[in-house]
Length: 192
Image (tube, rainbow, N blue to C red):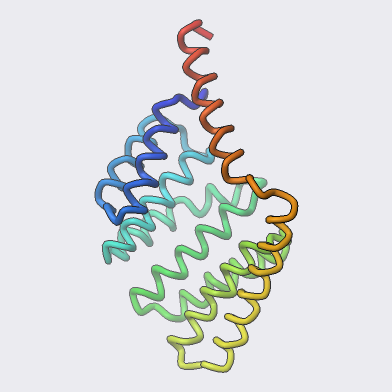
């Protein structure tokens, strides 16, 4: 399925609404993305994950968990395990917020194992941070401190490398996304 400019526009609007704390509006825009995408692709997972995180931000943890459980098998089938880690982290957060500490710990440990396997330092740093949150809530402050330290160390190392190698990566990604949307519009006009 060719991704249309409408999918990108709705996704951008959802991200902007979320960043501004307009979580209901973000859910609406991600719903628009879902109407125009197929299951098992990245925009679908992004929209579902975004919706789940927005529900979480609204305190609707059951809704968030239901969405995340529904899309986890899709992420597990993908070659790129990044989505699986992101979904497991979000599940860990939602379980933790709903006082299901054991389930939260299990999901965060699964996320940690996969992040290490795929050697993604940014994801590993994020998982360490979330495991630190879990340890804090479990009153294991020594472990939390160690996890936060690991998270910060990885983030700092990656930040230094990224600044040296890719100082304008965010701008390039945004430009690439806009070019894809323009190409999709051109193809639609030409009837491709």
